Amino acid sequence: MISKVTKKFKNLLNTPQDVGALLKKIEYLDKSVEESIWANVYHDSIRGYSALEKLPLNIGRWAGNYSFFYLLNRILKDFQPKNILELGLGESTKFISTYVNNYLPNSHHHIAEHDPVWIDFFSKNFQLSSRSEIKEIELEKGVLEKNEYYRYKDFTNQFSADYDFILIDGPFGCNPVSRYDVIGYIHEHEFSGNFVILLDDTNRAGEQNTLATILQLLRKKRSDIYYSTFAGLKSCTVITNQKFLTSI
Image: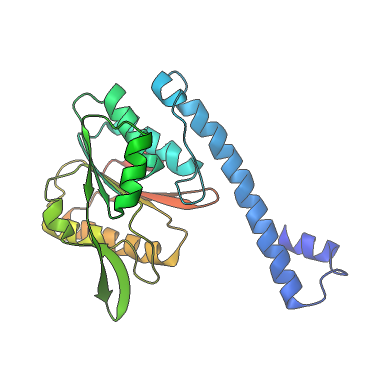
């Protein structure tokens, strides 16, 4: 496809920079088409769930994209986690809390967030389920192999419970080390039961490195580790021992 396009427009492409710019535009258009398809798939997946259909969400940009919210919906619907840990307060918090409040009566939802101003704004504009709890945690700089990254202070002590669903969309992403808090958590827990980890923004190098480390550590604990990446304008990856969740 790319070779045909470049031949068609060869008279307009005078420099390697022109070719590179065209290829980037084609890639963006391809991703936009994928995102539109995911939008339809997502809306179909929540049909009949009135609380979700009525929930106003700002999908995309800093929040998760449509492939992310589709996958989040399927995890909550099909896996039905009991203890949920979410890193980063935002649109996904609204979705999970609404799901917990209406469809998961035995589940609990904990959220890590560093920004008190954002917590205050969010809390004034959205009513969380009584089984959703925000914990404000200060950010600090961590260092791994001379590379600095943001992390939640004293994270593993703040969240020491066994969570069967961990959603990672915070704190701020860095390169080449990003959102590394879950690594310490994995070190300290057995992961002997059923579990799901959802890592957002795996189109970025930092998150890809974290994903590789997650897989390496979990495969030392058990052999039935599966993962799959779902891509639209951005990418997210599910890691689980429940193989069916990688092909939904």
